[in-house]
Every structure is written in structure tokens, then in C-alpha cells.
Amino acid sequence: MLRGLWRLTWLEIKIFVREPLGVFGTVGVPVLLFLVVSRLLGNRAPRATAGAPGVVADLPVVIAMIVAVGAVLSLVAIMAIYREGGILKRLRATPLRPHTILTAHVLVKLLFSALTLTAMALAGRRLYPAGVDAPWLSFAAAVLFSTACILSLGFVIASVVPTARFAQPLGAMILYPMLGLSGLFVPIEALPPAAQLVARALPLTYAVSLQRGIWRGESWASHAGEVLVLALVFGACVGLSARVFRWE
Amino acid sequence: MRERSHPNGRVSQSVQSPVTLEPVIRVHALRKTYGRTVAVDGVSFEVHQGEIFGLIGPNGAGKTTTMECVEGLRAPDSGAITVLGLDPVRDVRALQERIGVQLQEAQLQKRITVREAVELWASLYRSPVDGDRLLEQLGLTEKRDAWFMTLSGGQKQRLLIALALINDPEVVFLDEPTTGLDPQARRAIWELVRGIRARGKSVFLTTHLMEEAERLCDRVAIIDRGRLVDIGTPAELVRRHCPVATVVVVTDHAAALAAFEAMPGVASVTQAGRTFTIRGEAAGLVTQVIRCLAEHHVPVHDVRTEHPTLEDVFLELTGHAMRD
Picture (spheres, each protein chain N blue to C red):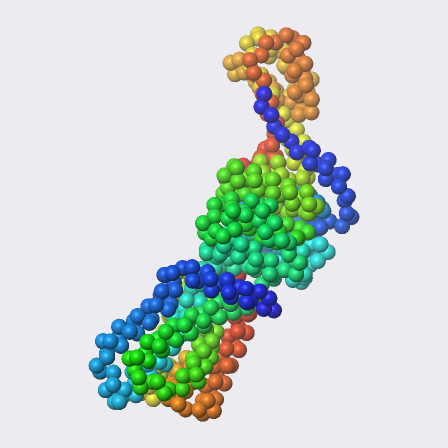
């Protein structure tokens, strides 16, 4: 079923790297932004960490989520460009399956998300020594797992979005509200009751909760619920995208 | 004298080659609609082994839809299709190993190199041919490391055809293989397609260029507004539908008009100054005119023959020109 996956993935990595601006936008810009913002907040950061358990304390989670959403938007855009440009159409007439193509792109996105986050972690080590004893490996696993699940939402959008012009706004319209309600910026408990209900129905909420818990040193067992929800979302999205995938 | 070449040599060639009983492609009463638009309406034809078969007609006639149904890329609404004994919808996986396709308006990734594309495609099939040899055959060796986006139109098309040949297919589908190419690149593609036939493979192509169909195809099917209008060798179609040839003679000879009108088989003679246009049965008209000129000792400034082409056949059959 996944014939050609590794070759295609490796090829798409090479093709991605050949567009320097794209690489800079994906890896360079977030890292630069992170460094600039850190410097601006530099003096206040320790106090904020001590005071509110808000954005700054969970900075790695915020960054991981923003990178994940960026990866989804980029996945959706690439598939739309491939569809519009007739590349998918040509691939269709080969033994390649839609999932092989999508999986290859997801792997590329995961790889570059990981690179971005690693670069930030290395940069952040110097700026926020407090995070040094955080459960890095466990957190990395949580980020990778939830990013893969969030990307599966992109699977579905990418399967149907017809044109590149439409792809970015549509992806943003779906993902940004999810991100806003995910408890990342405003605690779920502080939302109005109706919004809380919506938030609990959204997969990103579980990704945030899982990552935040693991980052704070809680056990995976205490977050089994989130893992289960995200795994179900992943399975459902993969299944759905197989049904609705459009080649042209 | 202006010459027109007719592909008679090719017709006899395909007769000589061993004809298998079962056609490689059989399409019966194919129908495909998009919403209320009927794209293909009851089309039937067969493609034999070792021939170049052309589906010709204007843009929007239903050529691509027909071809994509045969390739298994679209499911027909009704009708029966067999390719190499397989059902293109049901057996699409088995079929993909045995056919090669070049699709209209298909592209590759902008920054994929020629070599990478060939290697990727080769990795997808069970028994691919040697990629380097293929690139050499298609004159792309020098462009091996070039990105797809930097190739010229002709080079892109040659690469897309190379990808269609990577699995050593028994039937090759080419959808508008030379559209948008300059005459030189077009000729290069024609040579390539003849090369595919020379290796014993069958070629099914579409084109809206009548000259291309006439020079390249062993047999053509004319399709217009989703319906198949007629099918045969280019020469047969011309004979069948446009049996009238034209000979233009430029002479000052006073008795020319009367002499021409007296010839048997002549339908009409019109005179414009010293230019006489003679129309009549294509078979033998040229011989008649030359004999007549010799007998009456008519001094001529110029003689031109104008044979009808597939373009004329199309106009005759459909009542409208190819390029609307």
C-alpha cells in the first residue's frame, strides 16, 4: 500500500529544501521570532513564570501548537498546489495511492516541525535555564504524537480543497478558532459555558492538555484520555480523507 | 508543384504486421455525463495491436473524457470498456502495470529533477526499463539534473512521455502530445511516437491537429460533441467523404476552358483571369488534366493540385471547422 513512500518522502524533502524562502519561513522565521520576542520579554519573563501559569510558563506548548498549526496550513497549501497544478493527476495514473502521497508530505512536515522545535529548544536553553530539567524526551514524544494528529485534520482539508488560493484561508478559518478555544491562551474553565462545550469537542484542546501535562512533569497514564481522543481523531481523519480525497 | 504526403505506406505496414484477433482496446457504447452536460455519448471503437490510433476532434469534443475512461481514471456512466482484456475500473491496479499514460495538462513538482522523476516512477512499477537508456532515447540525457520548471515545453513533454514508457507498457496513451509545441519539437514527438510503434506497442492518442492525425495515425476516429462521427484510415476517410480533388492550372491558352470542361469526371471548372480551378473525382483527376494539357499543347505557367485533408473531412462531416 505504501509503495514508493520512502523515495517520495526523501524526494519531497529535497524539493522542499530547494526553495530557500520556504525553508526560511518554516524553520528560520519561528526561531528568529522566538529569539526577538524572548529578548523583548527578557526582563519580565522570570516574574511572569513565577506569577501566572499562563503563556510564558507553557511557552514550549504554545510554540509547539503554533508550529503544528503552521505545518497543517502548509500541508493544505502544498496539496492544493499539487492538485491545481495537475501533479496529483499525474501521480494518480501511477500505482501510488493517495495515502502514500499524503503520508510523505506529513512526514516532511513532521521532520521540519521537529527541526524548528529543536532549534528553538536549543536557543531557549540559554534564555530560560529553568526549563533544563523538564522531561524533554517525553515532551518531544507528546509533541510529535499530537502534531501527527493535528496534521490528520490537515489530511481531510487537503483532500478536498480545490485551489491554492482557497487553501490558506480555509485552513486558517478552521484551525485558528480551534487554537483560540484550545485552552492554550485562555484556560478552558475561564470560558463561557457554551464555549467550554465547544472547546471540549475540539481535538486541539486535547493536544494542548496532553502537551501541557507532560511538560509539567505529569505521567502519561494521567493523560490516557487525551491520548485516546487524539488517536481516535487521527483514525477518523485518515479514514475520512481516504473517502473524500480528490485528485483534481 | 506542391506535394501532399499521404500515409499510405503506414497503412500497408500495419496490414503486414501480425494482427491479433483480440483488439487491445475495445470501447462499446461509452457514455459519460458531468451533471447535465453529456461529454461522451455512445462512443464505440477498437484499437488494434501495433497501430497508432488517433481520436480527433475539436477541444471539448469528448476526447480526453473518452481517453480517461479507457485509462481507468474515470468511471463511465454506461458502456463497456476492455483494455488488454481487463476492465479499467475494476482491474485498474493490474492495468496500470501494463499501460503508460501521458495526461493533458499534467505537471510534475517544479523542483524535481529529470533523473529524480524517472527514478521515482521506476520505483513504482514491478519491472521498469532502464531509466538512463530511456532518457538517452528521448534526448534528455543532458537535462538529467535540471529541474522540471526549467525545461522547455518540448523537453517537459518528452519527460512526461518518458514517464509513460518507464514500465515498458503494452499500450501507450498520449493526450494531446504536441499541443503548445513549436513545429520542431512537434516533429521530434512524432518520431518518438513512431519509435514506440516500431517496438510493437500500440499507441492511442488524441489530437485536435488534423495534420498530426494525418501524418502520424494509422487509423483515426473523428469525434464531435461527444459522438463518434466516423472511423478509418486518414486516406479512407478522405476518399469516403471528400472524393473531390482540385487541380489549379495557370495558363494564357484561349481554348483551355473548353478543353477542361470536356474532360470526363470533371464536376466544375471556374476561371478567374488566367487561373482555372478544376474540381472532379479525386481518382484520376490529375492524370486527366495532364493528359488534356499535353493533347491540346496548352502552355502552362503553373499547375497545383489540392487534395482534401482530414480538416476537409471534418468540415464535411460536422458542418463546422475544427477551430471554432
